[in-house]
Length: 400
Image (cartoon, rainbow, N blue to C red):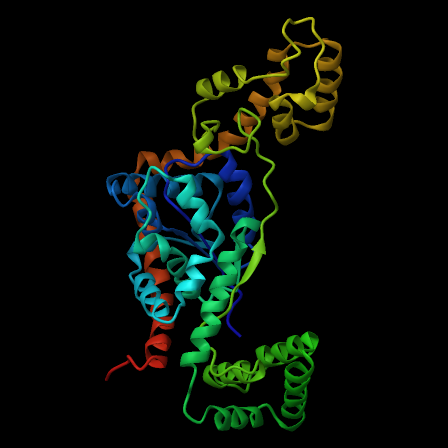
């Protein structure tokens, strides 16, 4: 069994904001201590919608990497790298694209949504239509088993699974596969071989998922199998041929509670963000000028926190005592809106302080950032080259 790797990518759209931190990065920080993680700045994906303005991408890439490090992503725990520095992403996208049906791409939910949303751009391009294939290549290239996503991205992971399944079906045709699988079974030893075959039958004939998991665990623990034999037995177990590409699972990320300055979801498109590394004066001004409950025209007018965007930020940044103070003070007009906003300002600045400290050394010495990226790209490429050898061999492209 392959290691339970995690893969996730982020487009370089510029400096990140607190919505990215609460919605994505906090989850990544937890995952990096639990799994081998590959976090990729997907700069080629940026070209699918910004192919006319590529000059903005490079600075955005470095800004995103600094923000990841500032947030607490640790290059000693996770592999941080840049997509275009690992050309195998493009090669695998090309090769799996050869057998990906056009209809699969046209039915991706976000395809028509994005075309409608970005009307000012000409997205009737091969690159935009094919970006789910490139996304699938990103994941499959590292045999990632887990992909942390929100619910809206689950269809992309499911398509990646379908692409991997189709590829394995078309190209996992190892000569004499069944005979080699049965020979590998005997290497398990008499009792374990018999149990493996019984579990395989239970899964394939009765759909017994528990039998599948039991057999997988047995194969993972077996010390008597070579990597090739283990691959064959995993494929034989599931009724497939040789497993070349691993089908990933969506690892659902809890929905972010991070609201923007206007109460909507924090997003650059709504112009309601607070940057991860924004200066204190700017943050203070933004929060102080936030809209509040329209009923509070004068300081003496009572209000309702549920109708105020500031209350949503208290949900993120304030403790129970402070929230209780807000509820009572607002409803009785015992506190003014500026008083109410102060604990939010302090909470944001307190959260941001260690991020600013971590980011500063990379801003003072950009060579440190370049070195981290170079090391991550080298490690990612080494892993990618191993998978590509298997892919080329399966497709008859490993000439000697």
